Image 1 (cartoon, helix red, strand yellow):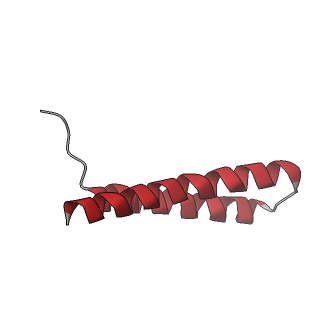
Image 2: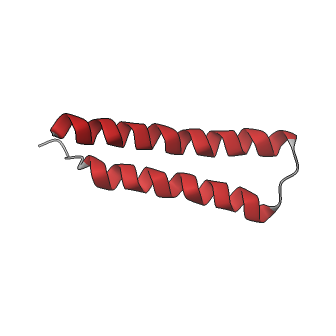
Length: 61
């Protein structure tokens, strides 16, 4: 079960970073409204937060 949770968190984290990166690259070449830029950035941050919550990362002791 632990491997499944870690795999899901890695998938969520990589997809969140991918969404943010694609929106930044796309907005560099095409003029996007501020709402659209903020929407994609917010979705990416939300997915990254979900990855942290589901990942149950522990600090080193």
